[in-house]
Each structure stands twice: as C-alpha cells, then as structure tokens.
Amino acid sequence: MSQPARTPDPPYYAVIFTSLRTEGDDGYGEMSEKMIALAAQQPGFLGVESARDADGLGITVSYWESEEAIANWRKHAEHRVAQSTGIEKWYAEFFTRVAKVERARRFTR
Amino acid sequence: MSQPARTPDPPYYAVIFTSLRTEGDDGYGEMSEKMIALAAQQPGFLGVESARDADGLGITVSYWESEEAIANWRKHAEHRVAQSTGIEKWYAEFFTRVAKVERARRFTR
Image 1 (cartoon, chains in turn purple, orange):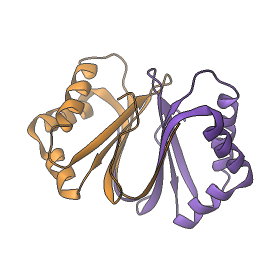
Image 2 (tube, each protein chain N blue to C red; image 1 turned 30 degrees about the vertical axis):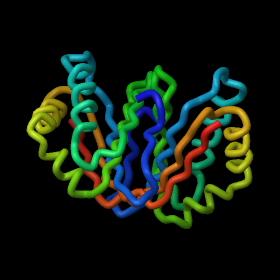
Image 3 (cartoon, chains in turn yellow, green; image 1 turned 180 degrees about the vertical axis):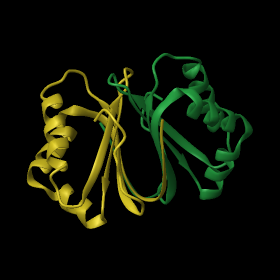
C-alpha cells in the first residue's frame, strides 16, 4: 500500500473508489485491510493503491485484467457483506467508477 | 478537495496520478495547490479528487470530458514547468494512467 501498483502494460481496468467516512471507526479499519488482502487473492487482480487524506477523503484504486474479474470480485460473498456494511454505517458518501486504462507512464528515480 | 468529485454521467476520462514524494517540501505544497486550481480552469475539466496518506502515497484523480482536454492540460506552459520540477526533485516515483470511465455509481446518505 505504500507504493504505486506495479501494473503491466495497458490495456487493463481500474476501479476508482472515492469515499468520505462517517465518524468513528466502528470496525472499518479492520474490514478495510481484510478486503484489500482478499481482493489481492482474486483471479485477474493486478494491484491496488489506497490513500486517505487528513481531511477525510479516501481514494482506493484497484486494477484488474478484465471486466469479468471486476464483476466476480463485486459478487464475492465476503465483499458483499463489506459493501452492505459500508452503506449501512461506514460511508457518508462514495463514488465507484469503472474505467479502462488506455495508457500509462511510470517514472522512477 | 474534501469530497468526491461531482462528475456527470459517463463516459468521460480520468487521469490517475499516483506518487511517492521525496523528502522535504521544497515548494511542492504551494505548486500542488496552484496546479489543482489551474487545472480547474481548463476547458473540459470535470473535477478532481486528491488524497495523500500518512505513509506517503498520494493519489490524485482528475476527470475530463475528452482526450483532447487532457492533452491540452498536459501541454499547458505552467503545468509543464510543474511536471519538470516534479521529475527533477519532488517525486521518488509516480505512475500516470489515462483511463476512460465507462460507468459510475454514487452513494450518498
């Protein structure tokens, strides 16, 4: 999580999840770490990047080989429980955007 | 910056910029704010979301109407100076990914 994801050459897919949290942790931190670890075990997973700003805005971008891989992860049983709980109590607002990465450039010092 | 971008219905484009900073500010904070304000004035700009994690990973996603709008912003004179300075001193590593947003879902409480 502490570095940009080492994705292969495009094309591939990105799921951009941007969120504002409600107040209090209420099990969120633990579930968040668990979901990232679980996502990484799914077929077609290419990488994930996540940051939450001091002002409360969080951005998690996960990268996938195909739309099918994204659909499978969305329907994963444990992930569905997390999604429901997110809507029930953890998030004040979120956007989920699915995008096709067409080109990428990496710089490293 | 403190909330998800209120983008219109897809399709539109996203530029996902993920970075690790070098140590020290060295003018970065000021330039970063200036570039976000300047981007927001460009034709075809739809919104921006930015978060930097306590562990140093930063994610900025800007949204654009078209690839042409992205190309124009990339070539903007002041932005080019910022890009050069970023490579020269501010970033240890970054990825820039250009992606076409195909679908989006918003949740709000």
